[in-house]
Image (cartoon, rainbow, N blue to C red; front, side, top):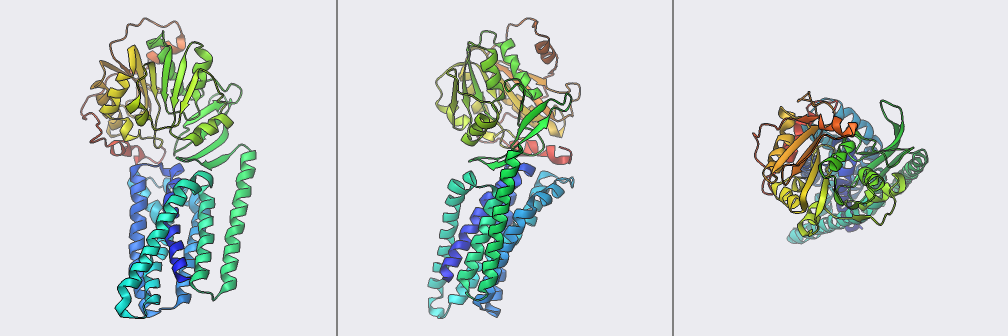
Length: 493
């Protein structure tokens, strides 16, 4: 039975690690810095646990003690499930940079259970080590079981749990699993372990009931195959007009819809995609990379009756939410592809009049493989003559927080004949972090003054081309995480 406990503990640590990205995402995003901190801290805690567990096992080689360690790991996991929101909210408002914040969050939430679970394998080796002549076989067998458990936990979390069970419920389920593993490690204290498992089950049922009640009230916190998504009712700040918003990362609304007009554009940056009708007035075919709440595809279908759209959205769960909650409907002019945008571009042979790029892996960083010169060249190859690519990014125009803008502008300038930039909010403030829109052309556009005053106002927000002091991003080197990191220098972002 000890071997089964070792297997289960190995599985739990990997489930916790993979679910950890969903725990951190609403507060820190899912950037490379967050993943690095999560993996590094868990490995460090497990290493310390292995050292401590081996020393403790030599002094007290008692199955009862190992069982208590496993049960304590379960309690820490349940505590993490219940306190993660408060802890992350507190840390987020301490004014630290992203790297320090990610490390601190991993230390506070994930180090305690990881340390305790790291103690299990060396402790189990000591309990099974009756004959030193077979020490290698015993250690190899138990560490192999732990590794097999980790493999099983990895596939279980990645293929099943994260896509179907919320992160809080996953952690409580793992706490229950550890209570079972504690019982397998030692049968003493049966009542305590069954009580602990019952408490963890009760908490799981209560959180499930809470989530269902919140969903009925218009608040949804769910996990999809690629994201943790929060949907809730809100209101437009200036007008008070009721909206429903989608959040997939910290600090911003990634998509929004007016409840009284699902096809209208609720977020200011999405309205700038209307520049497509100015720069490509004869547009017939449009490609949208990144679906989200499908704000502009819905608008385009309603406004441009002769246009067909291809929308590439990696996450089918996001598309399902758009259908259920954001008014997305099937249309013969709309084709949705559930795949990575770069993979689509690599094999694409179609040509488009307009391409919209609105893809992020957190609320501030464009996925590196979609920000490179190679991608820009693929986008150019996918354009019809006279077409335009419109790219949304979050950045300042200048200063340390403008590195992403300057690097991405340099990248598109190396692939296109002309690139223009527009500030969604305050073009006169170069240090303001905001949505910026790049417009890239295969040839300088022939354009006149628009009759639509809204389009004229957008064009008036054009900003100067930046100083190209950073090289173009490439598949070989695209440090988008480093360029975006200064965004976290202030706690109000």
